[in-house]
Length: 336
Picture 1 (cartoon, helix red, strand yellow):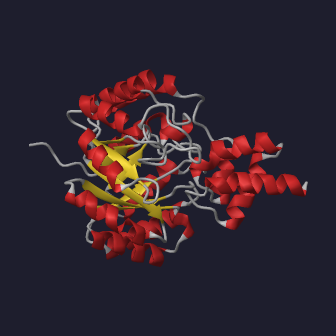
Picture 2 (picture 1 turned 45 degrees about the horizontal axis):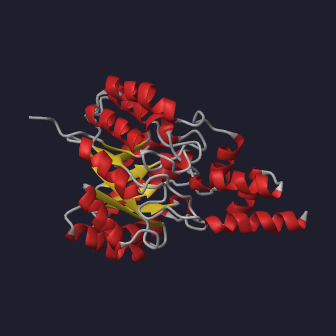
Picture 3 (picture 1 turned 135 degrees about the horizontal axis):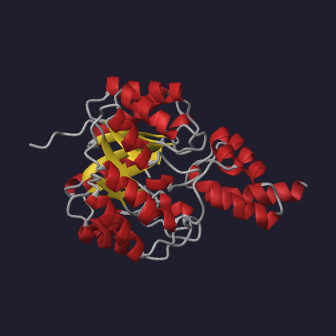
């Protein structure tokens, strides 16, 4: 009998990593990565546009290939891994979710801003009716207190979510903040808790370990750290560290290392590292997916991208407000 893993890993390079490649994944790339992750026994592989189902748009960035087609391509070659999708209410629709299920999705992660869980009700309930595993994904978790996060997570739990995540979308949290938020959910919810990190402050692996210590049993990783901003918790590193700690994931360490080196590394437009701009994301508490948008706006308006990000952090922009990046840059250029 196979031992149940202590930590369940969701691989997000084919969703969060879409930000880093400007949403230009091809079917061939998705198939190659999925086949390798499936062979490495990764439990869940998330596949969608970086901003979730239906995210392909002028505002968020146009996909090279429709996300439903990528989901089907991944599902067709995954006989062990389950394909997960991300859905942001207001971006993705119930119809998008139904199409994703027809394409082979087995899990949906319904993502809202950390104080707006009430907008997730319909999509969580529809996901359950469709037979999916359903995850509540509370984004930008650094922007709310543990008490508020508990209130919001309880809403998702009441709607039928099977798991609720603390999501450090900006890579802005330090370990004590992660510990407080995960522990609060663990104490107050009856369903499992997950954690999703970004590495903008260099803390993704460390924060993921703190989350596990505080009671999280679902952890996101991105192979070769391929994700928004400076990337996510690097999957192959996380697996190695957890194995050294005696924490079971069921993922084959050598195969995940080989996948990172041989399959994913060649896909990176540039190494995932902490640059001055991605560091600024974490420092200012700005959504990691804003990185490329801010850099484009800086070039367009002849500004310093860090200055734009700092201003965005000061006014508390959140995911879905990409248009504010260009509005802010135009305003700053006019004030020069």
